[in-house]
Image (cartoon, rainbow, N blue to C red; front, side, top):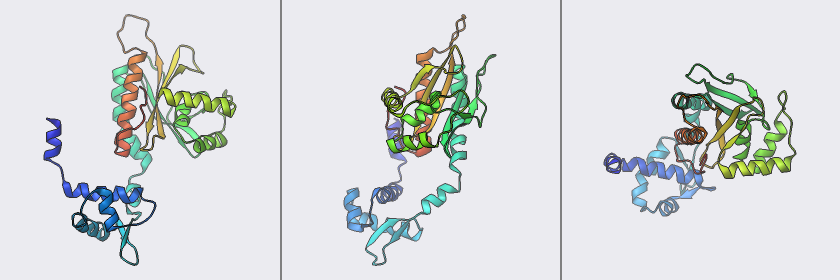
Length: 266
């Protein structure tokens, strides 16, 4: 039934326009109308009007000779009218609130920007007791689940830059690059971090990556998991990891508009 509903309300013209934009964005060089048609598996007469509209609206530019097309920076300008950091928080906050309530645990969202790992958003457990980090706190790369996840899901060059730019936080100790990279590779293979806290006894750091379309982490969704030992029924650690991974995947899809390609948290 869901598939029928989607098909019923499809907009073929819009699909064509978006297909053209995505094809030009992925192309390292300008393309002719023939090349665009071949790349999309469509006849030239199917895309002519759409190309003309995209040129008129400023999203696509013609070469001086008029036979090739390339993407302009208009999409970037449109995206920048809504600051990426604010957009991420607007999307993340309701999801984090819902998961924190379901798990009865605190959550925080960590990002890497300007050479630092910081807490961008945090929600405390809705119960009577809680463990949470202050928004804006600077955290470690080597001694936090968030830092490790943010570094694990990056190309090698970005990992090295993170290490080079990182300033150790109090009580943090660095790790030699080779064993640290080995650890990061293990985390990437596993899809998440699940380890004892390096700061507090009795806390398990659970962290999953929020991924961009290329499988790189743009944020880390983390739960400082505290296990209940009384008779209260609450999700166990396995259930918490599954819920955290699902929420991180949902955030990634909402932020970048495409399904996550890495099996994070599985």
